[in-house]
Length: 363
Image (tube, rainbow, N blue to C red):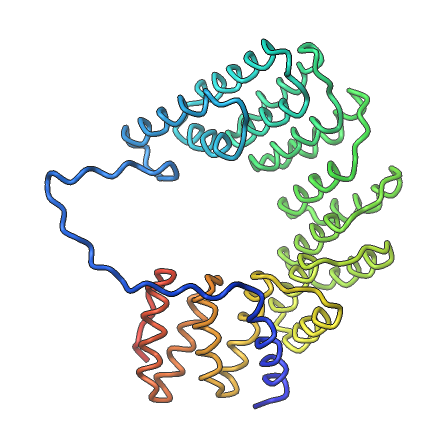
């Protein structure tokens, strides 16, 4: 076993404790035959069909959620589905219903308004979100950086990144609101999503001029954005800037850096980063494990460590780790080449049962 493989093996053995005991993979069940009396399955809320049945199910859900006092993820999911079905008036009715109810009770506040803005954001109804934000003082409700952040986040969720930029640059002066670091982080994320990395980098400099201190979310956003857009040479500069600001990296910071190293195929540096995490006592999570899989399996196959590669694939599948189909197929192909047909079949079956991957035994 090569030196790199030995180091990776130690990391893998130490990382297998990061999740609970792997669940047992159920045996595939034969689908029972249905007859004409079998009750039709209720269409799922996340179905991509615009069928009348789906609309009926969502209408029922709408009536149920309209009666609730609080607003949460169920309302946001409903808003996305109604938007997909072009039922925007229903979304407006939902928000107005909540708004009038809380105003009638005398408990309409900015926190509640932020959740209503989030409903509009999930429905991609940004003009309505802005209107609600604009009318807050008229409804005897405060309008502070909190609701500004809700509006910016609504634009981000709806992927209207140009609106994030427009509102951030214009609304604070218009309404005498001082942006906070949360607002800046939302804008940074929008710039990264747009691929406007130069704007993101300039904004990092502006944050200090505004008297704000960047936080770990600021640098996690930048690191992920520069990695995703292939600006690897700038990553080290951002990392150095983060350390100069006395920001302590967290697991997401390391995961973002790992992604970049893996994409650059800098395996030795990726292993060093894993080892650094272990030295400082930073507990890896499932995302770290995903990156470990990406690094380790190709190296193992290249060095003929097929049994270890198989072990890692099985452990990852059992722990619901995202496993790339190409990596699993690579292991299957190498096992067949080594005449380990039984092991290859086991991996093919496990891939099918645990995450519906259609691997092949052809070589």
